[in-house]
Image 1 (tube, rainbow, N blue to C red):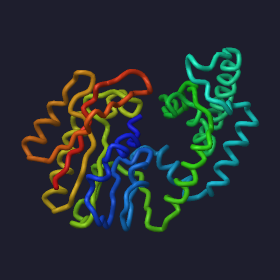
Image 2 (image 1 turned 30 degrees about the horizontal axis):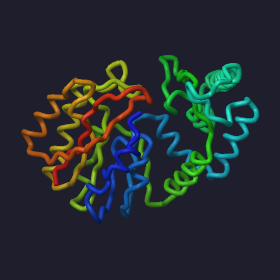
Image 3 (image 1 turned 90 degrees about the vertical axis):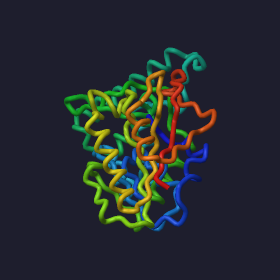
Length: 284
């Protein structure tokens, strides 16, 4: 959810400053933006410990080891090696077999209290929209999706391993509010892709992002600006007819630059068109 690959293809990174010293990805998520930006140093941060575990996995394990583990689990549990896309895959009995295989792996993972990050990563390839979510008991509870482990996925793993193993890539598991603004300089660039205040998603359920968080986000940006540090924020002005007036007013008050993405459409979980008015907000 919220993956920025489509926006990158629409020219998001072309709007970033040139000659970046330190690129700070404050809400890194999949880290796809960091992996496509040229900078001398990188700080990849996310408050979610599961994402931090994935970043660490790429630092610790080789791409070959990750791929071998996933393929081993596919063979062991009988997970799909073909995409079972709705309305196109007609073998309903086989779909049920694949779902049962997924549930077996998910149950084993939860029984062992999610001790194996490689199994966690394997589950994500087969979960709904390749997302993750944990319930109050700490159990992985995303239902089975329609995906499989493809050659393109292997390519992503190779790229991810290559990126995170670089000495100039630091990973962090911290609250965005604790960003040390004073430690940054005018050649650094902070990219913010926070949960969107006027949307709901797996990363923003049960008041996962509050008005207090939104206010703190604005405060961080204002402090960056006061210290002469460039920032850029991805957000939405409108989603499914609901305007984020608070964000619009803040941008107008501070006279930030706002870029839109012509004819860009965002598909939430592959279902429907949210008519989200995606924007990129900058102080430069």
